[in-house]
Image (tube, rainbow, N blue to C red):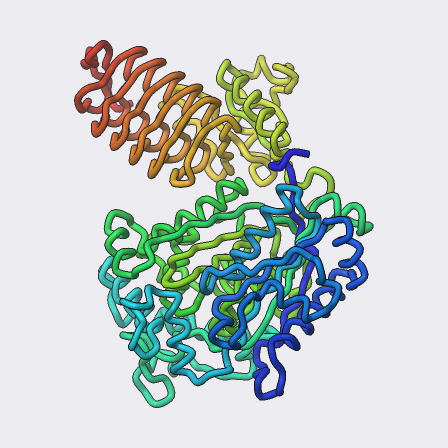
Length: 640
């Protein structure tokens, strides 16, 4: 199996009770780690003897997430610390991973990578933090190291409430929101998470009571302001705790267990924003999102999983403050940016809503031992999908998404976990709309993708020409017309392999509600700084550099090059060997013929067609056909 074909299964895990104060119990980090590892191994049905045996075969490794144990417990070298937990860890590869409050996710990311690379078959991921070893002011100062300490935290009491208070201020200003209504919605988020925590037997605040009125009454003795407009009820907790998750390869699951009915990692995203908050906000002026790199991490995960927001049944998000959960709502795609209040006021994000966020209680309700939070989130995704969440089990849990951030949304990690369905569980059903030459080439592209990583079960082609129905084309049946897709829209993905932009748009609009796949050939060279909408097709040999934005249903054919900061809007089509230079903007439904080129910094109007071999050296208006060197309009066509 190739590296890209390696599935990563979640076997289970454990979490300590986040309401405990370990120092008051007279216990320290070794007791914390021993308890969570003992419970985690018991949960997955393995023993320390199994760890010894797997280590002799070089098949197991440990991944430890912790932010700042050097300050809280005066201890570093935290990967090796596991050898003090049990002799079974002697010789086991183990390292510590740090990314502020996303340290647990950094450890998860490393574990997934090692399994996919087939370096190990079993990865034990342990996230932990003991934070109640110091007073509140010292704790706030320690946590300030997750910001740019010298400028944003040193000498400042409780720097992070102030930073996320600034996020609240910036959100109000960016979207021209009514401040009172905005703050009332933050109060609803807080009360929701406290309420959800009451269902969770390991939540720190499960015995607390917070009313919505109390959450609204900021600046009072029971809810003092802590940062700008934010009050205590807008803050997550100072928490002692640990979480454990075991990840495994497909080979390990088949060897050790009688069933492979375990949730799997479907998609992931990892993006880093400017460290200083002021630079984040400055950069965000060019985006509709208040946290554009958070949004991009979500999009990366959706694209890798070939899912969209409507496929996600529940979310665990990083509500270190209510203002961060507010921003996450649009980052997930639940609402448009600036309209997050709609999901809150409608109840959509509540426990029994259409898009439940933080059924566990989140960081506000469940607690936030910073190094453990990412691992705890992944464990809760596993519990929901495995039907093991108990009293906080949501109604439907086929796919779940988690967002874990470090600093002031500096490090952004997103993971999507999906329900496993046995052999070939990652093979999603796909149909290709269009049985012409491009459609047959896309079938070949799917075969190339599957050769690297089994991803798509190609059911066949779709074509409205009834004479083709039931025929076989290149080994695949023509299943029917667009009505067939609409009848099966909950079962299949589609991709529209029609080169003409106008026709492609008409087909996509007809297939309203259908899930569209994004297909990228394994031989494409593309940086991580490329943003793509749904339904895009990128063929072999193409090169996309940095900070490129592709709309939905863009087709980039063989051997094209796209330069930095280019924008290709919805339904743009590039035929083979097209060269698009940097800082160009192609409006909707532009088509560029084979071998055509655009020099840097130009704008091409909506619906314009550029002839084969043409060289564009100046802006072109919309709805024209341009040919030649230099390209000049030779005719205009109406909007329809």
